[in-house]
Amino acid sequence: MKKILFLLITVLSMGFMKAQNTTDALRYASDETIGTARFNALSGAFGALGGDLSAIGINPAGSAVFIGNSATVSLAVLDKKTDASYFDLKTRSIDTDVDLNQAGLVFVFNNSKEESPWKKFTIGLNYNNTHNYDDEYFIQGTGRTSIGDFFLSQANGIPLNLLQLQNGESIADLYTFLGETEGVIAQNAFLGFQSFIIDPLDPSDSESSQYISNIGPGNFNQEYAKITKGYNGKYTINFATQYTNDFYFGLNLNSHIIDYQEYISFYESNNNPGGNVTQVQFDNNLSVLGSGFSAQVGAIAKLTNEFRVGLTYDTPTWYVISEETTQSIETSREENGNNLTEYINPRVLNVYEDYDYKAPGKITASAAYIFGKQALLSFDYSYKDYSAINFDSNSGSSVFSSLNETIENTFKGASTYRLGGEYRIDQVSLRGGLNYQESPYKDEVTVSDRKGFSLGLGYNSGNYNFDVAYSYAQQNRNTQLFSNGLTDQASLDTSYNNIVFTLGFNF
Image 1: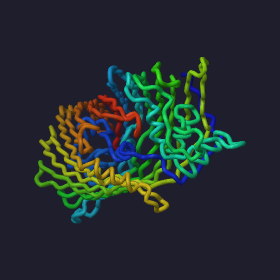
Image 2: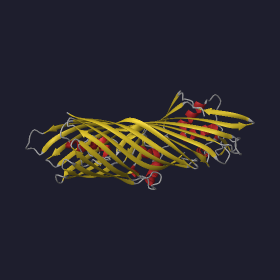
Image 3: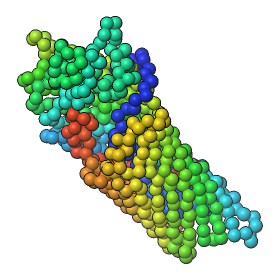
């Protein structure tokens, strides 16, 4: 169907929230192995090592391991391939992006008093892209449930007179009124009614709240496209110190930024008897901006010259999030031998009340063994309780109580294991790593465990270093097309190929 650009002529400020779900909850709580090329090459197993700008994000004590001032910048090429299976058809989608992974510097201040046990103090500034949201996938197949069932689930219980235009009232007027007074469910019902997908069971009763679908039962050719853009970035101010030759302590103060854009387009066609609506295209756009704060405290201890351990506590991240949405729908139907088209675009930007979101904290324990100046082996273990994710309204209402209960019943604590190693030959370093992240879902089916490996190569001249890394990860997930009514699931198998380039300087 023809795509028509939105012309936003009305801005609607709404107290009702968009219908958040567990997918939204997990989106801002999960993070990825993203950072410098050396960090990626060791699969992020840096909690007991330090000496890397991205390692500061794992353990803030790591900046005190630096011998001198240092700066790095990292660029990444991320390729995502998604194979989707929906009933009888399989499709493949590929998305490739170039992004700034990391940029930062650290200043080292050595203590001139040699007799003092406090050897140095460091200040670091770093940016890390903790989650790249750029992605797209396409689902296609012959479904058994229609989009009409989604609109029925939204409309049933809403009086007919709320969905009917009054004298002199426009589509935008009523859509705006429903958003202000009833919320997004009523807006969905209104779109379904005005586009003739649903009709009241008793058209003569303006108080009727039961509806029927004008789409006949049978099979449905369905296409679902989802495109996402954006990132979750973390800006860090780091403070660390070295005590004697064996202990390092650090603190991070983190500012988080969410910039997320989502476009979902659903298309359905049928030639089933028993109904007159033959085609539907339903488009939804979501824009999310958020800002947050977190802190980290960490320590590294040298138990021997070769063996060291690390421990880090990440506080929860507290966000304030704002959302905007737009919608449109287009339908084709047969009526009295004529093919009629309805295009409903309220041209209204729904601006929702800001809400609070808390991502769970994390504990990381690390160990590393240093084989002189030739090699190292490092291991990190971290634990995060995803059932502690929490939404809250700034107005103090209990609008999120049901969602928070669902989150608690859906998610669980999950562990992440990272193993990395490095072998040096003069100025050249060979690197590799493995990582395994447990599913945050109790059923372990909605989203599977994530597993991957990494490889890397580095050159260090003393004054500068150049590193490159390749990492691969794979994860399966099942996704519903809609939260209600049309709840058929597609199976997605996604592989992540990431190439990172880092240039570093010592000054």
